[in-house]
Image (cartoon, rainbow, N blue to C red; front, side, top):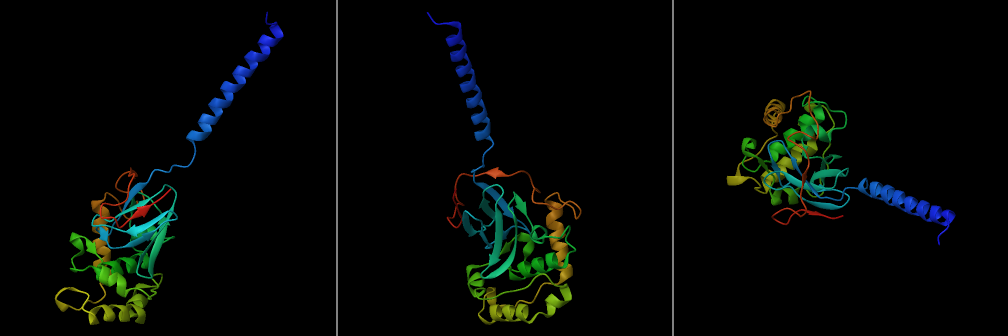
Length: 228
């Protein structure tokens, strides 16, 4: 016959085990999310932009897609030219890459937009921006500073020499020569992109265009990779 004391000890043990299991389950459910997410980089969709996170790297596709884990930092570049970095979210724009920017009027935001739009292969950013593999290859070994006034950026010898180099190697179709996109044109295009995404100058952030989307694999053309 089991004594009342023994029965009480067993009962207390069962209750403690149940409580521990409940706490452990709750703790486990609050752990890191390792589901690979899909984001997009937009100034129109930007294709050919290299990106890197702590767990993966790749090149944005024709929809501007990149892959990341929640909470990761993501860095964008063209060759060795660092465009900027941000916490990865479902939608990123040049505004998100400039730490103290709140809208498209920040000089560094404008300079990034000017640069990306100037590299567009067909020079028609309205149908998307395509940075070709040839252009990305020519960008190896270059460093460009975007955090400067727009007038200074326009006169920046490195920017001019880089575009001259692309023109010299015939990086653009039909041998056409490319010059730096104007501040006005770049700002207008970025504004139109944000408006189409449902954002405004005072409502810029990484969550534009909807929440994060789960994606358990890499991009369809095999250019991107992610790991947990």
